[in-house]
Picture 1: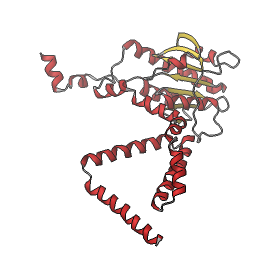
Picture 2: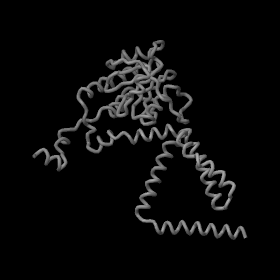
Picture 3: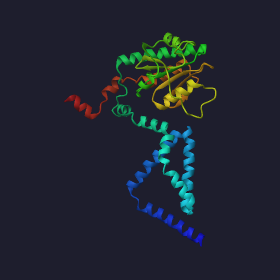
Picture 4: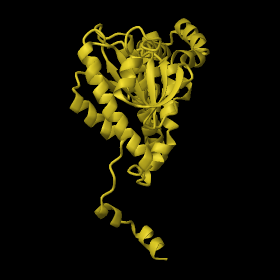
Amino acid sequence: MNTLFSGVQSNNILGSIINNFRASGPADWVDIIIIAVMVYLLMGMIRKTQAGQVAKGALVLVVILTLSEIFNLRTVRFVLNSLLQIGFLALVVLFQPELRRALEQMGRTEQWISQIIHQRGKMDEGVRGRWQAAILAICDAAEQLSDTRTGALIVLERGTNLSEIIRTGTPLHADVNSEMLGTIFYEGTPLHDGAVVIRDGELVAAGCVLPLSNNLQIGKDMGTRHRAALGMSENSDAICVVVSEETGIISMTREGVLMRRLDRQKLYSMLETELIPKEESPAQKNTLLPWRKKNETD
């Protein structure tokens, strides 16, 4: 009798699902697609962190709850429902770093707007010149520090404001040159263990403390500097240059990705691409949208 009842109940659930699909309209499908994309992006963001393991455990609980509904396991359903009542608050606490990172990425409206109106190639000439000189100095310093196996960590600010990170260090406000960087990271100096932050091509602070990454796939041959560089790039759009104290290997992090074994020329090319927008050629400047042409002729 119980088996027959369970079969009838399963058929009712299946029939209800089918009827819901038949009654769904375009708005419902858009709604489903948006939720699916959000879940996909969230899982992609946390799959390499400790929160990813928690997410798998939460998924197991959801599956068990679904089975308890289908097979009418009242005790299991009662216990899981009681746990899920505080589940939302628990998820906010557990996924706090990932949620903060996602909100920061959503909040970078300046970058979105600049891409939409094609203003990415515009940069103040003074700032452009400082960045060009700074990149050359960083590459020279990285090569020299690599040869002597002197550890270094350099953070290059882009769209995300790093004032909170800068306040953890010692203000400098100096020009970027290889001698200055070599002196800061020379073993035994007070600031050699921290990070240097460069803003608009100017060295603004040294000895700064960075957030550490929770990435579980970081190799054992990489120490605190690499973990700090990854953590900084995960929590902002900053570029980080790392020189390993043990191996002398030059690395760069961007958007939570670590690129290792860079030589001077490769590092220079990558930094120039990331930090200095390409100037519009005369042909591109003359290629205007119709509304822009009309406004200029008015």
